[in-house]
Length: 119
Image (cartoon, rainbow, N blue to C red):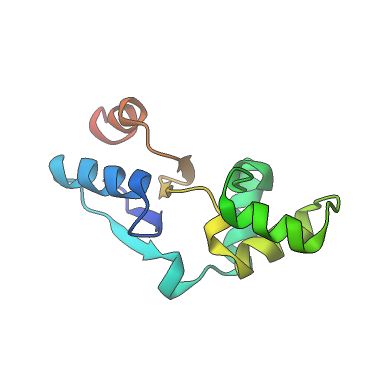
C-alpha cells in the first residue's frame, strides 16, 4: 500500500474519526500536526495544483471569521489564501490525506473504503 499521510490537528473531531478509522482497519499512516509542525508554502502550492486552493480553505471556521473581521472584506486571491493558511493553519480544512498522488479532504468512511480497502 502506498504511504498515507494525514494532515490536521489532533483535537479536531474529523481528524479523530479519520485516525480511528485507519487504526481499526490496520492501515499504516503518518500524522502531520499543523499546530506543532506548521505547513510549508511548497506543500500548500502542491495541494492547490491538485484541488485548487478553494477546496483547502475553510471559510466556515471561527479563525476565518476572526481574520476577516480584522482584515476587512478583501478579495481573496490564491496568494493571500496561501499566506493565511500558512499563518493560521486552523483555516485549512481537516483532515487532508495524501495518498497515491492525490488528496482526500475531510472524513468520508465510504470513500476511505474505496481508496484504502478495495485495492
